[in-house]
Image (cartoon, rainbow, N blue to C red; front, side):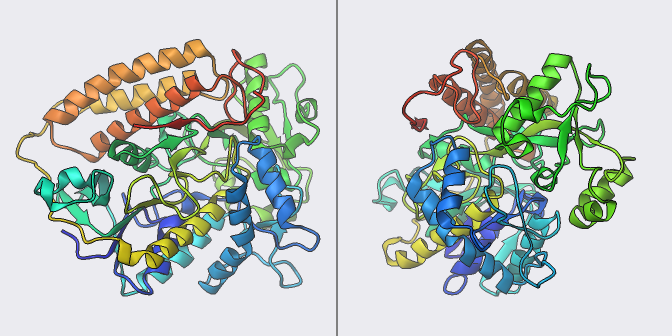
Length: 534
């Protein structure tokens, strides 16, 4: 059992922001699935969007976000996040985040697709790592924060897990913490708290090709769904247009900022018109169009000409400029035999961001008392049908703090947890057929890529739904009879999330933002969220 006031599941930007804010008053436990810095935050290359440039306005940032989101955004959420962005940047600077500066000593601002101004604060092309270092350093130095790596969350603890039904009189909609598998001991532990924050990231690994880290298996979304929370807009999976095409390196992102600084998308040598720059034919904003448009354009050219990839070319810029702006990408590519200062980069789209998730309000509150969510695990209304570049880290900071503030302000309304049952390990045994887990993992990621990708049809979605249900039956039987392992926990969550994505996609009878179906190619008149309830 835990003797901490608050449990946070996830150690990236959202989780650590909440932890640092709460630690001024409370004892906070942060669980990480792997290493503390192993989540998506550390992988982020591009930056953080904020209105800091003279001539830029909150109204402009709001309009750009709403435009990218295809009108599905909740305007009050967009206003809330955009208006809190400059303060979030300042807090990171105060924590020691080492952002890139311009020659005049001010923050250097770059521009990315969908933005009408330069408003991207960055640390060269490794912003996420700079942010993670600053937050992690502050968390480790705080005696009120306990960081616990290698803990794989399994399920949220609710009233049904109380030792006696009468031990809790809060109904069935309260969360008291979580059960988690300890990789070091091989056993499941229970962690109780008066408030729990999900900051577990997205579900990118539902797909065969993804820029997300290995652990992005939708755990928080699946756990919240099983506990009784609504999820929304799960059909909106963002595919980043430019992931490096390399047979050995399958998830290296080429940041949006390469196009923001003048990179051109061109057809490669085996196309009928090699070197042809094709984006002007798809959108007047060319390479700076929102990600969904650029990803579909690349997908269209790859399928039209039977290509493996297209080229992203910034070799027309000065070599020193390219090396200075993208040092990490330059070094990585040089190691793979590609010199981006003299030759183009082979790129393909890859799953990049989960725009849907656990439905929350402006305080990070979910449908369950005592449970909050922040960051990519949530659906706050910020992103709508397509996330605008560099709004993701921003959402983590703003909602991590919002959830923490709400817990602090309503602490007296959060009761002490009742006595909770320990995890029952007596009924299960070890399995000698773990090949089932690996086979099902590969199968789900392949059919999600083939049937629920950038361009969809009703027939493909129905095929995917059928396969999800067959796999769910297999995994439920396996889960009920064998001891849990990290891979089994993740597979169970992947199947849950895949089912939610497919179900949501079948509900939406239009094409909007990231959801494009050839059966309903037009956008409907009214923008409505897809809300699923357990």
